[in-house]
Length: 196
Length: 279
Image 1 (cartoon, rainbow over the protein chains, first blue to last red):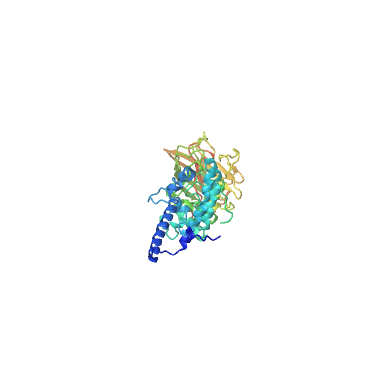
Image 2: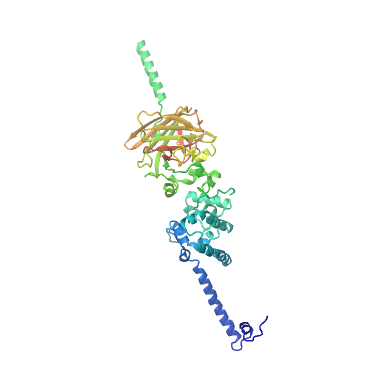
């Protein structure tokens, strides 16, 4: 089935260039690669912005409103963590994996699995458990983008915080083990962990 | 002369026995410790020991006292916004979420004397006790109460006790193991002080501590003095530290609408959050 048509597109691509030097081809290819990669990355990072996330009313009317009442939105120093800071990994491999996984949300948006407050509340526990499991499996990687035990000044913490963090380090716990509900309302019907 | 002598002897004996019955320390010499009480909302022991509700439950499992995290150098370290919110206080929070009670303690060979001094706040959320503007309560845990030395009175506080949301109105507070001694002073004129216990249910009398209470109000400050036998009920020997908690029903409150303290230790001539001095 191979085309012996010398003018076909595949034939043309396989033919060596008669007009342009190797250096020209490499340089153009290199610069185009940068432009392409930059565009790809820009487009992908656009899906990491707060505005993109809340362009879906499911997010804007539920979890965004809850997040606005929390310290990750407004605090003394004005340092803000937006959706992607917690929900999208920063390193490339994990970020790509998450983005591909997240494409299934497009299906959910189309069929409207959580497009009313009632539907959202009915699935809040399931959605939360997905995220908690993801964070636990990565040892709260996204939290540790900004926070670390080593960076904590124990003197500046309240007693109950420093005591709990010491317990967490002794028991090799991860941030999400205790800090559920830090940015969004805790769902009803949370299971009590049997093992710590 | 004989008659005079006998009368004098009788009168002195009467006076001596009368003053022994109301023996009291010189309160101006007894050190006072301020303990902060707070409105607890709906936070029974089932809530406090559930990790999903209260991450501090992990600390309790490890033997930490409630006050160990929540009493920071005499100030309460609590999320008051959460306590007063609809989830933990469905009926409505009182105007004053926290106030101090001055606690003094002294003991002699047979008895413990405990004095509370406080200004009782108005603006209660549920003034259901029409007769008593104020009730002052102290409970002591015996050594059989599980985690009694950590949680103070919380082992008696359950989500199914009366005045809790959805609870049976007749179900009194109770403890699953061990027992508490309960002393209560009521502000109504002529009201009988309670010498009671909390076991599988709360009883306002039948206590073995022969507890008595006297109270008065001067200006806006209440002074309530409890006396009880060291040996009765929860045994309090010299050198022991007894877990205790204080609760004040302010502004005609009843049931769960009291302001409470965390669990602390009363040292009878020994180390404790409050030290009772011998006199």
